[in-house]
Image (cartoon, rainbow, N blue to C red; front, side, top):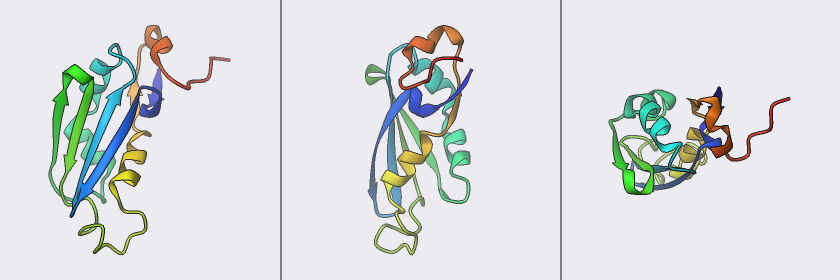
Length: 118
């Protein structure tokens, strides 16, 4: 089944200058390998096409079941220089929760906030 990332993980973010730092933390150890496999640095950057203009690096924090993404040139020149409204790491991190994941049906019980099938 295909589900938004928000049912499999939560996020934390920060920003410094024109760089955004977003951590994606799996809700359970069973979901982490799926997130790690599907949410690559390339897919992360493609998700923000037109917004993230620089390099994206992904750091794996396996002990915490987390991925940390550092996106360069992601904040329109920097928070204090950008003319965009709400162009902060928080807004970018909220958006990635809409990234679609393929999750096998047997992991449905690990997901958070998913409505039961009708």
